[in-house]
Length: 126
Image 1 (cartoon, rainbow, N blue to C red):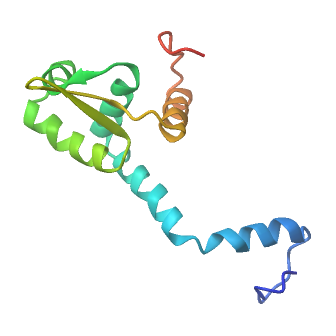
Image 2 (image 1 turned 60 degrees about the vertical axis):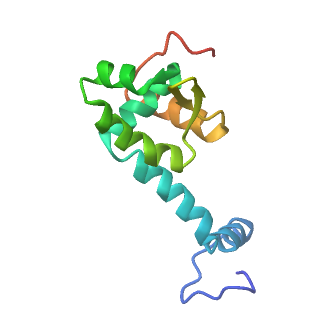
Image 3 (image 1 turned 90 degrees about the vertical axis):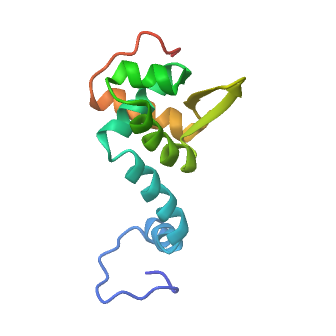
């Protein structure tokens, strides 16, 4: 058993795995970041917006039309997605366009969503 952590019961046959777990379990801020991302995607509307923006760049008005919602309601959901780093935006004149951030995390979330929903994405490169 690891010298750093002493547990009441020694059930660990693999000391290397135990040491790895102990070394990382206290990285509370890392777990908080992941938790915040999952909180954003815990809302079905945000999840739908995120999934949509994985496939295209769109403005608020078009997202609202696709989702049969008002533009203010869509903007309300876009703010936390952007604050969490899951989506980005760019301005072109008066119009703001949104898309998913180009990160490994967003790519993995996209893949996970489509596997869980059993969607075979025809428009994404493999």
